[in-house]
Length: 186
Image 1 (cartoon, rainbow, N blue to C red):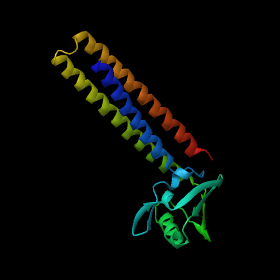
Image 2 (image 1 turned 180 degrees about the vertical axis):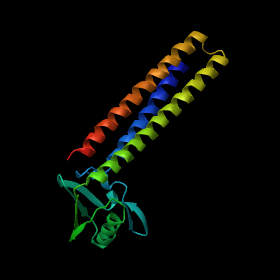
Image 3 (image 1 turned 135 degrees about the vertical axis):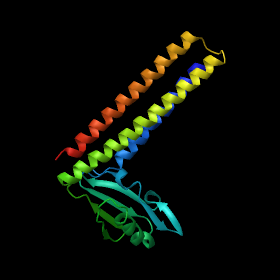
């Protein structure tokens, strides 16, 4: 019973590492508009820093344009400033309560740089998955030492943990290959 719970917990944690990777990849600008591109933007409004999605709705009306509909006229300037200063290389244009954010073409150097950043994110995800594997193996050793599982069960579960790890590393590599292809597409 404890083994099943352990494997379930390890799978959940490895899936979490993969999900974090997908979110990080969503924030990488690939030359195509995406609402996830503006997710990290924090706006100085109402006496504090709030996420952009709490003061405006974000849409993608065209492949190379993001439209930000600000709900409160008094924070339009703050939203514009937050997008400009987010370090995304974007230049928003304000028209009333609508802010249009054109997504410029990426040059070859910037594309290469983005693939390196994507590779770094993928490596962090692999390290997270390996750390989860290490925790699982240590937990199995403790269970065997405490007499809760036999040596044979330990070996069998050890192989299952390794298989789980290999599957997640493969999915990370596939996600990275897909993101690289998306970035390098002209």
